[in-house]
Image 1 (cartoon, rainbow, N blue to C red):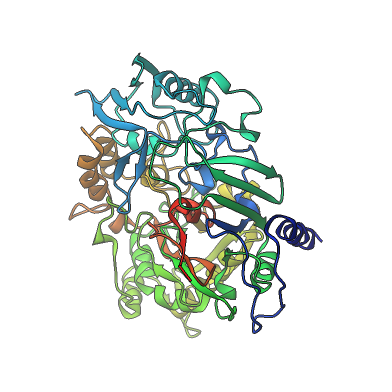
Image 2 (tube, rainbow, N blue to C red):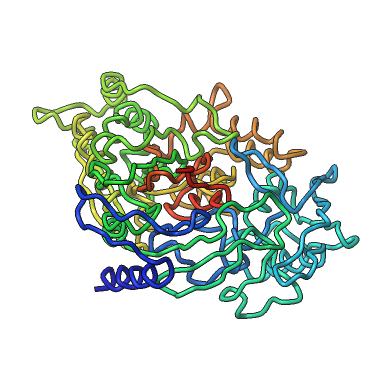
Length: 530
């Protein structure tokens, strides 16, 4: 009923706002041609992409599960096509020798949509408020932000943090003079668009900000609808949207007037392999053996997973940061089932008459967990279990709720999803939690890996730190690529139905979350001339 209601709401919007044209149902029929102005576009995103807390950067807009560049607010930095740091509101960045003070010079031609100038006071207010209030972005390293003049800000850190510019890229600046508890519902920003209308649970309408300081916005009006997959597909079949997200399960369908648009990502799926023996509360006796973990890494056919589960729309994943500037190809392996079996036998896991392996009477068994309601991860778990069976490892699969998943993953492999435009993804997954014995999400600890990452954060600048993040993955003798406490399976392509004639600008690698990333560059989309 909710899907039907959303679709009806959209059709009414289209009829009364855009002079709707007639439509014909069915994938094989000709959809109605859009009569929307050629400087506007209608986009469908998942219902999960609608921010619960509204469009307030301090409470997660532009960060968290669906990291993107805030459209309504401006950020100090952005990432370019290669995921390197570039400038937006900032014109210059420098850092003190001890790495504790970052200084940002601001452009002087930016103003908010209410006409008030954007100054260092607004940046200081945003960052200090986020440090106190944010539950999404990590600002624990920030001691305070200080304005030294109208267009210069100092960020005083309590520890060196070389990748601070990557944090800057996702915190939109809010106006100190117009910020209150209701800001997220009627935001004032200095970005490319104004939030003109928001009908919670249904749609939002963005219009070009006439006060924007940057390159002229080409798409003057952007309508974003929030729909479940089936409703999004129905809207495409009716020819009443211009771009709509979709899943690989629908990729073989034909939609008249549309083409399938695929975006490469670092939206990865992988399984943790607890790297210590079971002690009664955590660990796993099978995966504690590094030879077993290496065997699994070699024995899984990632390309087959992509074909069977993603209909071909994905790429093999070998780390949590494939394609990032801090990635190293040392993570990559070729599928080699015979080498995998040899490693298992070297580790003492020998096949019986059934072909299943055991060691000292203990069977080689795993339970692969996946989150309840996640059909993709369920399919990945099933395919992984099938492939492990061919190696002689028996694997069942089980759906678990997030209320128990984190605890269960301390002793059992789980299918996870990660991927962000920051090296901190490596740190958060693999670094030993201070004061504890292991990393946060799965039992693993390597002092040398920790040391490389700690040194990377203390580095003089973010570009110099890349080599250290790479060394943590593999320094020629040891690292994550050898320890393999996680096995990465695939990077999931983000798929969309794209109306013929709509030109979408070049996409950088999308992070985890099939949502707002596609909209990041909507200001430069255009329609082909007829």
